[in-house]
Image 1 (tube, helix red, strand yellow):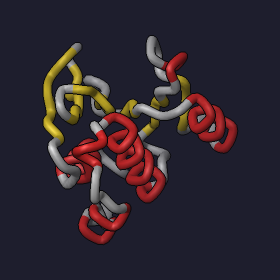
Image 2 (cartoon, one colour):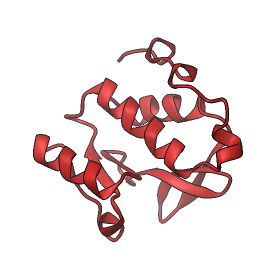
Image 3 (tube, one colour):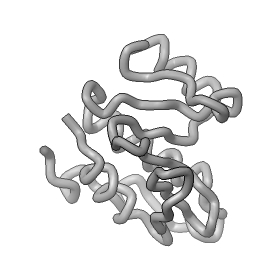
Image 4 (tube, helix red, strand yellow):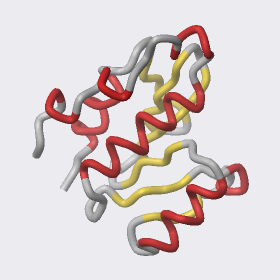
Length: 122
């Protein structure tokens, strides 16, 4: 089961990510733009996604994935850490960062930049 510490390890390996407290939650940002946040009790993580990806995730596992409150209409997805697959969470967070970061930050970035092997499995 992934934890909040696992989420932090993934996002800290991405270029120019910072963690800021907002709404009693840890938010993760690139160049000031938020791409993910942990719930106050660190039971869920919400990540920026497309509407199509959000629908596909919900259809695949409605217990783990849900439309995020307030931002779900833009594609953000809420993920239950207790039931999400670590590899799927890793991919979702990297994609959320990539979707949010300016092009000059992502230039030269490859999917191998943050290897799953670099993030210890829990």
